[in-house]
Length: 124
Image (cartoon, rainbow, N blue to C red):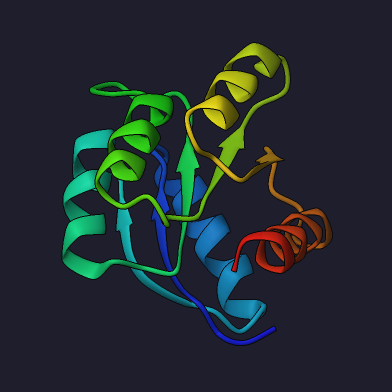
C-alpha cells in the first residue's frame, strides 16, 4: 500500500492523536487534523488529501453533513467514518452521503488497516 496524504477529523484530541499514530505506523502522512466539520471542509479545500477519516458526532456540524458537503464539491473524495458502537443508523446515513467505509472506536490498528485496505482497493 503506497503512502497516502490524510486529513484526520475528530473533536477529541485523544482520538485525533490515536488515528494519526495508527496512520503514520502504517506509512501514511497525516497532512492536517481538524476538530470540527467546518474546519474539515476548509482543510480539505486547502490540502485535497487522498483520504479523510471523519468523526460522525461533532459540535458544530456532524461528520455526515461535512462528508456530504466535501463530496458535493470534490466528488472523488475518499472518506472513512470513525464512529462509536451503537451509531449504526448514522453510519448508514454517512454511507448514503458518500462515505466509503467506517471503523469503530476505540481504534485498533489491525481493524483500521483492514478497513483502509478495503477502501483503497475499491475506491483508489
